[in-house]
Length: 442
Image (cartoon, rainbow, N blue to C red; front, top):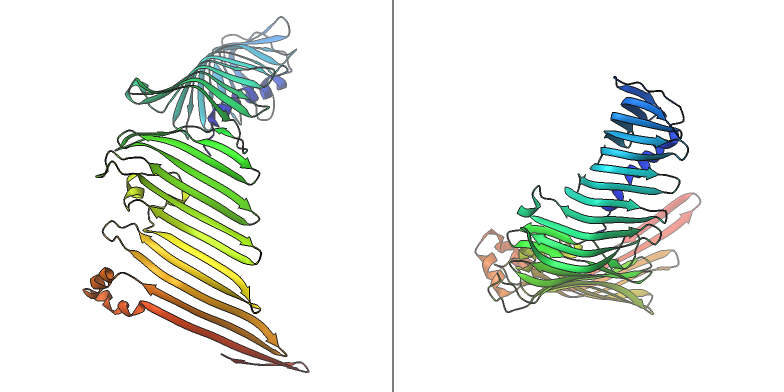
């Protein structure tokens, strides 16, 4: 799900610094004119051009300093470390480089005892997301509340030549695992195209109702933007409702419903657009859905795997994040219904199976209907009896048979039609002393 995990990554700086200031217990004297390096723990090293012991048990690192550990490298012009409360203050013109993040900020403070963190006028690069995040102020207070003030998020080197999301305030409560964005603006080529005064979201990977991170992409159809809304309906079910806007096509919605009961996962996926500017019949609705449902009523077992769509080009024209439609290599959609019931000690099942072609040059259906099957397995004395009786019919429209008749596949025409199969097996077992004798009639 689309969480704003990258916001939490900025807290790495605070965690990193807590290891450093908690480990520095030795006093040093002023050693100017050279770059001094010493280790405070096995994996934390501190170096500075000038280290001075000042009043209040504070160590002044100036004229350039570096603090390195397994988390990354913190460097800057100067900083003051107070050993009495293990705080790091007056951080000037500093940067932090980690495995997946790089942050620059002009001033900063960290107090581990009160859990206070403050960074001013900063910019961060999240490498795997290719996102630039700038902020005037980052503040984490004693109540584990995080605030970003005057924040901008973009993936463009020049946001005026691409897209940018700005917000007056981004708030995260680490205790309740909730967050909100105030005065959200989406800008495209330096023009505001979307505004939202308030956007709540869950700040965790746990299942909590709320807005998820907006998804933004560009294609030949222009800007593609949607905001997922996640609703937890029960401990075993949820719905994701995603209003969507594609600049050159129109507005629509995607819906995903999930429900789990025992070992069965039931899903419903829907794509819907009220119209498509690029589609020849742009007044027509374009839609696709897929239902996968399995449940048991008394001894009756029912399964549905049913799909349908408005036109065969929909899934090629409009990409989607819905898993059931995301396989671009699939050229059919299933339409299956299965009913199973116990009968005479065995099991009787009826299945209807069709496939809709997604090939626009082959607007036909592949059918196998109906399929009736009876399975029985039992024993009589020392003999075991297995019966499998199956009847099914395969069919395709006449137009497809005519196409096959013109090429080398014509010999496969005979494969269409009804099949009736009886599989009868009787196995007899006789045990004499240590010898196992058996015979099978099939």
